[in-house]
Structure formats: structure tokens, C-alpha cells
Length: 166
Image (cartoon, rainbow, N blue to C red; front, side, top):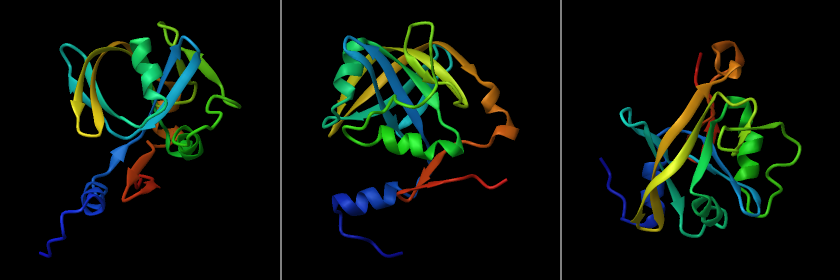
């Protein structure tokens, strides 16, 4: 076993070996729709229904979502790589050219995601160069796109998007 020097890049490389799913985090804000892609997303608790995600301090989108007090999460399909890249690009017109529906709280959802959650922010904790966000899911559903015939989830591994094997 070879040890690397403890640099930020080597830390990122090691963490990149952990495969994650990818979601969109979107909100209706005072100035319109805001959204970002996230792969630091996980379930926390079933009772109560809690999720967690991390938002970078240098995000230009997260402050508007945080101020809204809640957001929607769309679980992305394997054919959503392009939309994910768009939502990860600063200054991109993220909501153009796609079909959006609204959660009961009014947040935008990608109509053909695998599933969705409508969340309210419960806690925010400082965590290095990110904020750790704990949110309560108020409503959620799988979608017709979530059946196995529609494809699997979009996953991220070692700095690249990937697909699960059949």
C-alpha cells in the first residue's frame, strides 16, 4: 500500500473513488428559479424523513436556495448527463429548453427524473468549505421514469459520469 502526500488534490482523488448518485437541487426563490447539481446527497433518517446535502461556500446559487427555506430534489436518470453538466456550470441558463413541473410547495422539478422530494431546511452546519444541510422531506414520489425500463440512475465516479451495469 502506497501512501500519498496529504494534499487537497490527493484527498479529492481518494474521495472520487466513492461512487455517488447525482441530483438536482432546485427552488422557487424571490427572483425566480434557482438550481444546482449535487452529488453530496444522502438519506439521514426515515422517522422523521430527513436528507442531507453539502453546498459549497463559493456557490453562487446556494444562497438563493438557502434564503427560500426549502427546495426540491430531482433524482437524475443516466441520460441526464447533459442537464447535470448545465446545472454544474456557472452562468448557464439552467432552466431553458426542458419540461418542468412544480412540487406542492412550488419548487421546480425535472419532469422525467427517477423520483423527487419536496424539502424544508431544518439545520445548516458549517463544515469546512461547505455547509452541511439537513432538510425534512414533506412530500416525495417516484415517477414513471423510475421504472427499470426507463434506465438507471446517473452516477459519478473518479471525476466522470458513469452508468450502472445491467
